[in-house]
Length: 138
Image 1 (cartoon, rainbow, N blue to C red):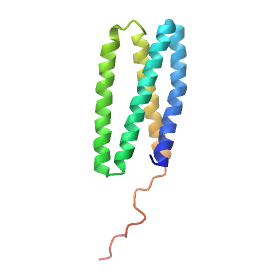
Image 2 (cartoon, helix red, strand yellow):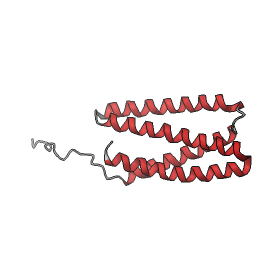
Image 3 (cartoon, rainbow, N blue to C red):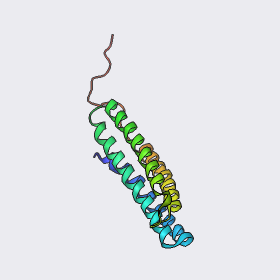
Image 4 (cartoon, rainbow, N blue to C red):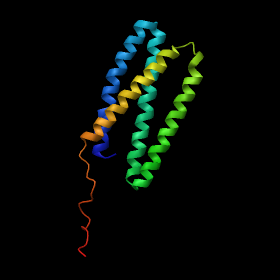
């Protein structure tokens, strides 16, 4: 992973962890231990999914912009499908509160996405290769 990617990852993971802790606390107050467990599972799910997606896109960006775009779209589609499957699977769970899981996943996803966007905006990435020759004078 490049240094820019690590900065973006930290810029998304740290706020998500803070907000996730608040969500876990709120779920514990509202639904007890089962609520806290559901919220913690939601936070962990979002953290793992989005970290894996960012790492995959980071490595794909080394190959080419086209491969990076394919990796981004593929990881996004897989994340959406797996989270939908998890929500459907856990809707009748008794070991933890599925509503807390769902709200935690939603809130943490929004915070992670905002953190990633902020990280990419603040990252000073070159959009031109400084080593390439300029346009030829005609």
